[in-house]
Length: 195
Length: 215
Image (cartoon, rainbow over all chains, first blue to last red; front, side, top):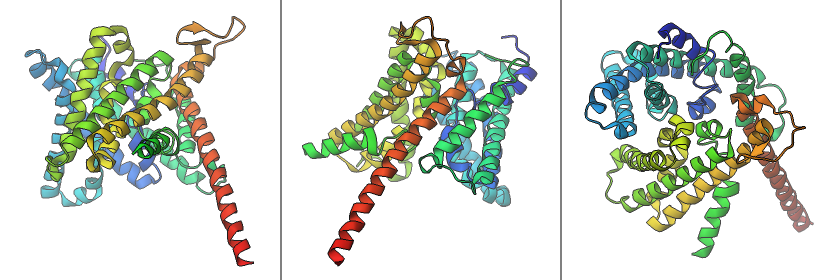
């Protein structure tokens, strides 16, 4: 309970990265990471949506579901909150910031089904974070996810010209790189750790 | 009819396996595989949710408006996931705690949505139920292989029973996150190599056939 939001923020970026240690958001991570630019676009969208929805879901859970004893409905409610928020952002962007909509817009529908967003909301409930801790975890989780996908995209672009055994091309190779990255990130867990 | 069922079983368990061939549902595949018992419970949960979601989506396929079908499918899936979660918490509280958020994350497991979209939308309820269940079994099969490797090397046990004697030094990395990536990558590698060599053999026989007919 008493973990400082700062510790949560930095730990969720590095040592307890949502992707590398909790395996959240693997599907879009593996399919989008072929290209650095779209990885960055998706990453930005994830940071934004994750930060806001983790706080929204926290508020909905604490002030609507808990008082009415409807905790068991949290899966449905969380997914609706996320889908509704993404839809709303899409409409606002399209109306007021068309430029941003064209760069970010195509990634927004992908986010609803990104399990990292739902996973972070569920972790917040399970670990009983308070408001600030939820905010820190949401923002840190998004930044950590983006960091991981950018690192993988960078590596994959460099490795494109090298010879990889045929059966290992694509997902298999990306997974081995991710495993090595996870080792490196977890190596710092002596400095900071949550869980 | 029977051949249709056999075809589905062959596809979901091996040639079109959701985890190793379509790379779907990776999140939970990596997260719950540190112990075989967790994996089996998770696998059964996913198989049941996939089967019943496919059944429901298929039964309602002519009623659901096309435009909102994704949202309806998500809600149908969430409904079954909540049932699984409640059953787990009531009867297996320890297991529920060990699986943590990953039970809820069955909702965003792409295998289920994929089967609903690709199969249940266009097929009869009973066949969709079977297809969903077998897809879940294909997922369970791969996860169990990963879990057996990880638990055996990480703890020297399988399902909690000691298999390797005292001489075995547990590999701590097998308990940690990175090993999941390595083990799954190795399985994908082996599976793909087997398919590639089979395709090559088939391709050679075809070209040989063309040559002989040309002569």
